Length: 210
Image (cartoon, rainbow, N blue to C red):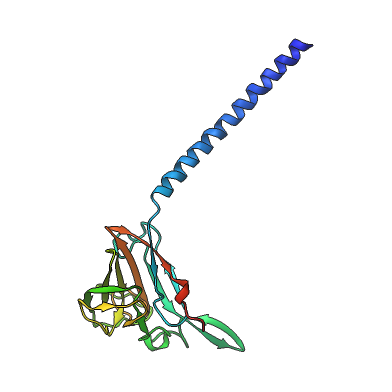
């Protein structure tokens, strides 16, 4: 009986080892992949909000548009509450949005996301029709922070600064336009340092309370 019991215990231990071994290998592989992924995590850029009003941003996935300024960038659209039948909804435009002036962001001041130097200003005078994708290039302002971080603001209009000028975070430097590769008034923002795209994090200390 003792021999049989020991034999059964051995078989149970063997079966348990065979069952758990693949799980242990899978866990080790997952941990390795997680470590590798963590090592590749992009740096972050803490940005002053782009507008003195509410806005929403859609984000570019990592590698979706693998170009500096586009990779990990965001497209930001000012919004307001609109009353519809006694109910208020946050929307980007009034009426049907078929005209640029229907959009709450159209011609709204764009605030500098950082204490920066204006490196470049490029303009496209063609205003797109909302809902119709325009042709590049977009009007833009390229900024550079003291640590070498570069920040691009695209689809702007009416820039209020000049190349070489120093600007402060939160300073109005342009207005929202709809030009280039765009379907509606908004501002695209992208950041990078040493040819590596950065994730943009909004400085919540400066988000306006409306």
